[in-house]
Image (cartoon, rainbow, N blue to C red):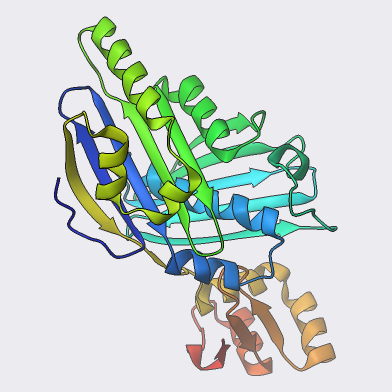
Length: 298
């Protein structure tokens, strides 16, 4: 095997020549650091957010994406929302909302009590997005996603996700169609047995070539495409202006009277957008009139 990229923040696709199984490996460093830096996340919340971030990138590579893939967890527990987005431009962003103190060792069931995991795929030019929902009955993001694939896609899929302070990483194996069911079951059991030895440190510290050789050195593994990933936010002054218009003129005027301006911040990237009296008046007099980004604060 030859690796085309050794730098961080990339995804490596691979396939087994002797088995109807494909796989993906991912490591995120700079992207993960940027997402974490937006808020002072409790360690347990940050860990789940990082796992979702890696998972979104893994899943986006399994579909012909021309738009965005969103993973969203909602619950009645102390973590009310987790949301990550991966676009067809290979950009990622994510956030989490929580309340109360959360113990460093809090598990998924505690943080997301009674929660659901929603997978949404929005394709450009397609009005109706695809959406799949699964209850968070497992105690890991990987387990919840494996349940989703088993129930919705009917594809044997195994996912490993881990994070630390520096890196978010993931590994996924997925069955491909095979004419001989006995052979595919045998291959699947063998490869899963080999992958089950994977450790957290191996996933977060080893490059793709080294890790795949360590796990599957008796198999013929062929590397496919490498995808570079980065953090990027799709917020804009226009979108914030649309939000202000949804508030209505009366509420916008009340905020203006109290503060002298209307300011909203993007929860994903912490960019602040400020609208003064002239800006707000323009929003409600001419829907096409949006001032430039000169009043965008970072």
